[in-house]
Amino acid sequence: MANVVGSFFQCFVSCGALSRTVVLESSGGKTQFVTVIASAVVLSVMLWFSVLLEHLPKVKDILIIKF
Image (cartoon, rainbow, N blue to C red; front, side):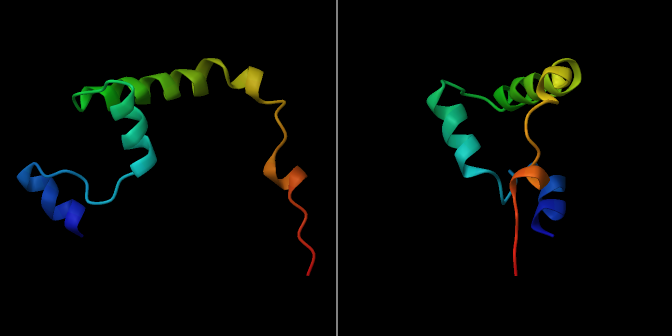
């Protein structure tokens, strides 16, 4: 609810990934545009390099749960 109301007043997101923030800040990111660039990199990997990543093991193949 806070994110919806805050969007009308140019507020920052109230819950974000702290680890992502630390990595972006330690790599020298100073503005919010760094997040746009990081998102573009992730999107390009998903679109063009997903063929190379398809042979990685899937969680369902690794995780065996016994009750």
